Length: 105
Image (cartoon, rainbow, N blue to C red; front, side, top):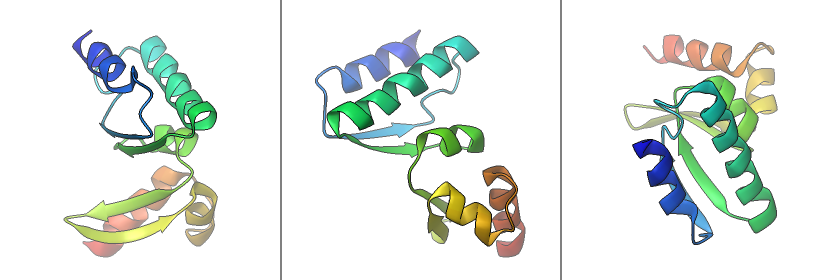
């Protein structure tokens, strides 16, 4: 409940720029899906830019138009999900992430 309230307070005034760190962490699947829908609407209808940090690659693939993979402050890759998948020979964004983590190790 605290997570939902914090996010509601952050987007209540319809900001043009929002930073969210693991926004669906600790939410049940229904609440997480609702939040993803609300964030997508905020971006699409209000033109908001949303910076989202997440380890949930499926969520990043659904929500993000641009994805950056960063490890220990080093930018490993950046592009839209389709570009990143193509660079890794398709697969999922999670496959791309895991490949980048192995390559950088």
